[in-house]
Length: 104
Image (cartoon, rainbow, N blue to C red; front, side, top):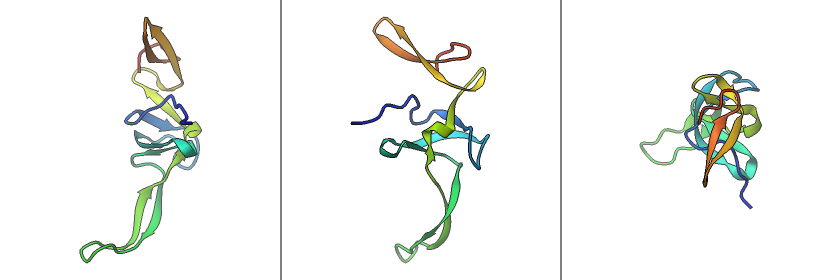
């Protein structure tokens, strides 16, 4: 069974806990099985990479590590990091900001 998250790919989120607290960026990938997301330019870790081909350089590279979904909050354009609510418009369900009621 696939888990449902209120955040989606390309949503701008802010990290609210951990070593990168306060950093913002878009979501690159969602790992539903592990309840984690990968955010562009945040939670960087050094990783030893093996040389794959003649031109490819191996060595130590910085990659974005997954961060738990509970440690990120979606960013509203008006009021900053916030929680997400839902509003039904007839048959359509839209995501709204809990603080100002604006659609996300």
